[in-house]
Length: 400
Image (cartoon, rainbow, N blue to C red):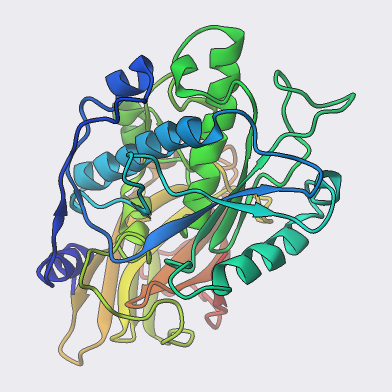
């Protein structure tokens, strides 16, 4: 079944629509202006856990709840509008809301000093304490996805005009971002020190959230970059709010089966039902100036994306990966088939395209939202026209 059909099926399951209400009166004018064209979003079955985490020697920064609520709701609208533009329906990540219109933000106070939850080392202790908090009371955890926000360090290196020191990255279904005094939507799009700083950290906020919602890096095709700007999961963390930024179709297809995006009434369990998929048949060939991929795999596969990228192929070296969404169908043996045509002209941004040193990443997604990846390095000059290239045994790994 095609991913759009899955979305339509989910929408039929007792779906209710979250109406666009008035922007809360206590929101500032700039937030009201930016949220005035909000679209109606389908109500989500699961909501993102939003956490404000502080060490035992710190307090949340002033007005954090109003500031972060405005920022979160604008990002929620961005994701929802991009899902709708890509044909996935008006779905976005769910948020717990308070009666006053603010987002429900859980304040978790750490057992250690703030500096003991440092960038690169402090995430494990932080996650352990956040998970203990969420599991301490029934109903407190609303999904498996947590967005953890920590105030910047204030020391000889970091301050409100140079925030940092705390975790700022995605880790599977969890992600981290930071807060600072000028982290306020009133600066969005302004060519001022605060505005440029906001684009950097708010773009990073939206980008790392994407990782926490299951998204890998991808830059976008030449055509999409020309039409829509910069892909958020590529370099969009440096353009968000300042110049056109978008989500690619492959990203939106992943989000369609992300736990916090599915509509009210969709009760399936996520990320636990299926093992690594089995490839029944595979063909990768070059037809003129186009690469073609064909896969036949298990019936439990709902989505396949293909990414072409440059070396090196290590973690966080794939910001320039060019994504392609496969056409999905079911064959006579009830296996899932996927086909994608990848014109070389759409990969012109790749530095190694002329050298031919590339890799194909195949991302396979099952009905429970689990993601599996299979990477095949290849020499473009040696890709045959008959699909007989030796792709080796599929070596999938789960997640990212």
